[in-house]
Length: 267
Length: 275
Image (tube, rainbow over all chains, first blue to last red; front, side, top):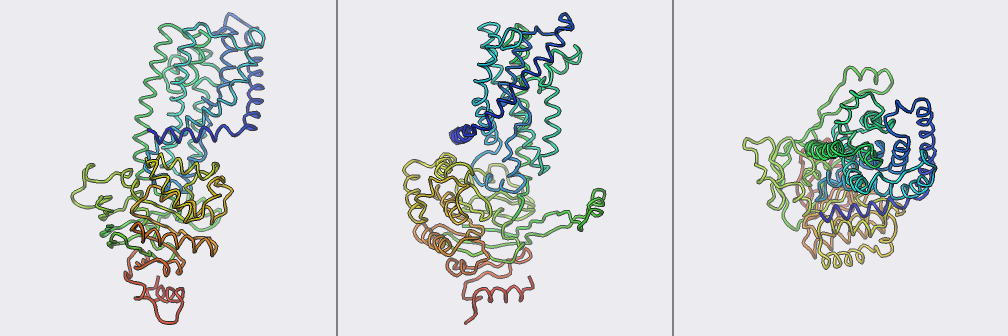
């Protein structure tokens, strides 16, 4: 366990070095956040009754999503993992007494945490001071906040487990590009990153809520604003937990096979 | 002790001619060629030996090293390293999981350097990579201190340790790479072209170091290289491989002829075997 923790620590420290990237990222995310909220406002003013979430909850959802983009952004892969599979440096990775699945998992957590750490505080602080309906509200209740944290952690782990599937699949395909593109487009729609899932038609929603992609950012952000609570919330967290286990079992299985199959490229 | 018995390995490689039309054709019909990287390779290497494993490009040297490191599966053959059975693919009685040594257990006891790759983390100072390797191999603090001190002195790492890997020159990096693969005091060291691209001073330092390591710690060294001076300085035994087959296994004296330089001798040898 210690080896994975030290690796995690090293990667985290490295990730925290990129200050300029963080500033640029924040600027983009403010812009996106404002734009999205304007669009949602336009819809809201057209017909508030047809609106599945309150405007306040929607604004909170958008800001949390922007602040924690590094947690759930589907495209946030560790490029180096694809590189070593492609150019054969995987040989070195395999020459160390480590499980590559666990190593890559630890690495992905560190990557996302370090990126989020640099970006989330300023965004959340500014969003909290914006006028009602445009900014970030306080959590619905202390209890909601507690479950938000639980669900957020589970969501992060589910997201990384999904990434892991792409990594281990590229052990077979050698190039991860195609898989990445496919993965990103599917995740962005089905996880509620483009529009929150409550905005989908009800029967579509019922199916979407059970898929692993909805178990990433969708659940914690809705718990925060009180859009998801009580029985429904417990159920959603349970689904997250089940997906976390299923995805990891499958990912490890594919990984173990791929590791044995991956012909190490180059000299 | 290292033994390889009748090890075979072949790769399937898609081939096509140059050009756009050919590339389009390859979309529908792909020609594969079976490349036999290793054909019935057998040898035994005793503890404390220093073996030069030589052969022309594409002879199967790296494939052998990868199989011995436990990361490449041979198609058939029986491989043991220090009593650990790595592979016995293609035999009638396959090994159970308990009998076969796991990759993790095996690699924690060997050291590997691939001359054309890097195992150090690119963006952090070398010493951070070393500290991480300490945890990865679960090296105890006193052993780590002792090894690090010795390696730093012998390979003249001093100031390099605090420099990020990406800012090291090739020779400097290679010295750090070699140190990195010896921190856990492995009994067996695989060096795959360790002196590639090094200047005279670094080459001498690396050779001197490998020699010392072998004499003082009894480390078994298997070295692949194209630099015949490496072989002359280090190897007491030479295994020559060509087209996937072992062609010769013997001492330096066996191939050396009076007056000729090592490179000429080797070229002569390659020609004689038509490889």
